[in-house]
Image (cartoon, rainbow over all chains, first blue to last red; front, side):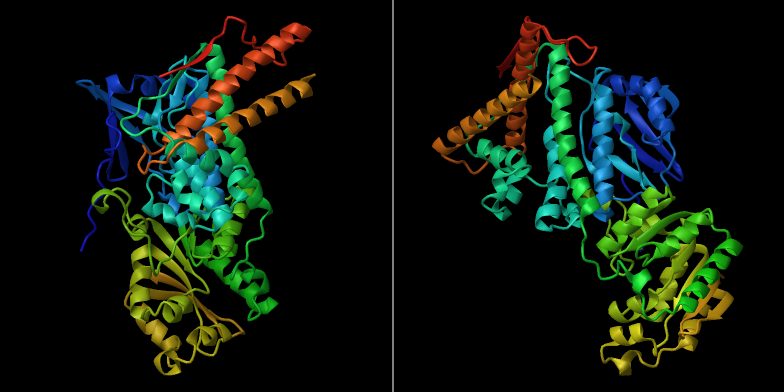
Length: 462
Length: 85
């Protein structure tokens, strides 16, 4: 059954965004987005766009109080539940940077959620241009402060201090309330920064609030003072984000696969060199523009693809390995977007009527002209118990043209590890069975058997 | 002198937290509250305190005839910071 197309966005009444093929069209109610529209024409917006931090916007027309804007499509939209912790930090910093630079111009962000940010490689891009609105010059309050805490800070802190997965954000569009974290914090932990001001004290104030409808709290200050206080409030949030980022940089998370490329004992130096040479040659000949690296691990082959000139999206399920891939791509400024994603259990479509955020495969289908599946097929086959025919069919769905696949024979130590005594079910699978499954969808363009018994294939879609 | 002002600020903030704590301990708890209301209250309290400290700092500077650290003019005596509902 074909997936239902995503709905036009609807949560912000001042405008709506829809996809028309590769076009991204935004209808805006001009009188409800005066500040945002003025901002988009300003030098600051231009500067931010040139730096790649703000989505490019074109004015496509205006009619009966409605303005039509057009944006380019971000190549591979990703969602916070697929991001690495460093990506969360980058998105949070971008949101605060933008908010802070708006203050002087009498503007502010009316909401602050990771869903306003997408990624091009490791560069976060702010895409919800209608979030920008005029600011009450006499108020030192940022109304989206609590939303920033709920949707950015508390998930990050719950991940860092309690080990709650960031992928849980899929179930939590509005993030965590202070009360969600409080029962899990230690007696002293709850009184130490950052939990004291982000969880414990807000929760106490909530519990002691009188019942019944609440009036909106306001403070009026001299505009100059309000600006200083607002700026200080943002700095406080930034400090929390900075500390999480710092601990991520210094943290040594244990990884099942993070050191795989360095410590893969079943690979001799010669095996590895020949594998790298085969992949490099295949990429050079195929010259793909968009590569999907399945089971990317810490990104050794993602980087080969990026260095060959391709835009790469790298999926893996191991958090520390993916985080490592992210950090390396960021340091070397490579066009690689590492995501925590599993082709065997892909992210479903999420949101209202399952049509707000498309599923992982719906976003990937038809977008890549080359897929890498290196040292990964036996995981799908044995750990996930996906039949070879199904794997071949998925591979064909994901690439429009090329694939580079590594076949791992039953004699391989890693194959045996995953086999776990099920020899009768899987032990008979050999290269012939692999080729029979692939043959329906692909022709072999090149083959190379490594001394360790593994076989590399460069495949072309039929 | 700057360090002294910073210490004063820290002491004032500790006092604010203590007041909040005492207030919290003396009232009964209710099950339902607006989402984010506690976070908003924290921001309101923090902003009032910060506003007060900025004014205090400018007054101290004026008293000691110190120049403000940046070129932008400091808040003057006529600035007001009051909470309303």
